[in-house]
Amino acid sequence: MLGDQIGTITCTTTNKPLSTEGALPKFETTAEGAGTLAGAQVQSIATYSSQMRADGTLYGECPNQGVIMAQDGVATFRATGMGTFTADGGATFRGAVYFESAAPSLASLNGLCGVYHWDVDGEGTATWEIWEWK
Image 1 (cartoon, rainbow, N blue to C red):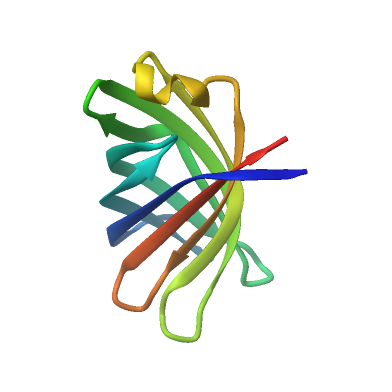
Image 2: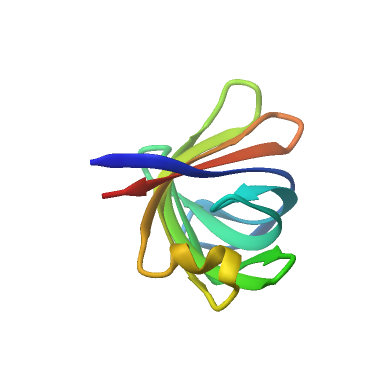
């Protein structure tokens, strides 16, 4: 069951192509931005990769290469998701995210499974909306 929304972060993204595995492209995306998470003002930086699949969809993965910085400490995260390209040259992903933090303001994220929408427009501006999955 989808629970409460726990965060919204807006980021600027940059992409670079990676070595392919077969004939389908693979991309690395770096995202930096700010917003709120677990009620705290945060900064975020992450790098993830996405691999195009034969049907045109994308599988994305952030293997513990995400950092959330709050005033009282940091959190790391890992995420996976499925996505597609959009008509305006952006992409949209839906997936799961898991956080780990010793920061008091972000401690409620420990042990939580989050589900998210990650929507990037054609200009590279992304919105990350996260909900608790109960």
